[in-house]
Amino acid sequence: MTSTEHLDTLKLLLSENLAVLDRHTAQFKQLQDSVKQLFALVNQQAQAIDLLLLHHAGIQADSAEMKSQQADISLKLDRIRELL
Image (cartoon, rainbow, N blue to C red; front, top):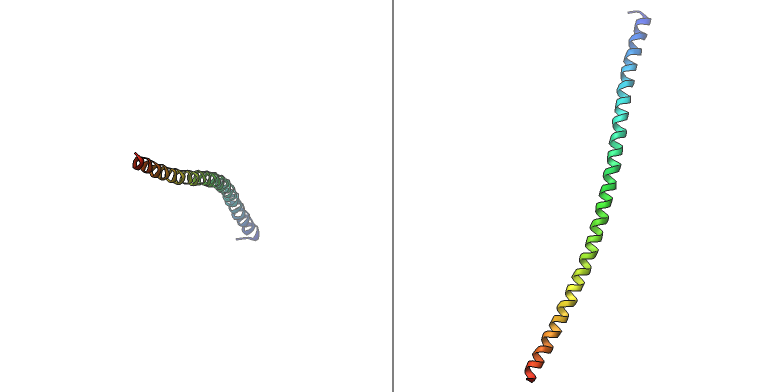
């Protein structure tokens, strides 16, 4: 094989490798965009969960207060019944 043939072979291999590299670069960019979208969705879900947990804590506090008030009312009713 002459040096020109070697050079032509190397050029062909280099061209093929660059084409593969270009394809991999495009795939990587697609994957990168998908990961960014996924992180954005996960962030939105985390914010929604935080909001739900905050509301849940408020509901629990309200429920505890209502139970306390119900117990007070029950005591007062018992006292009224005793008086009657």
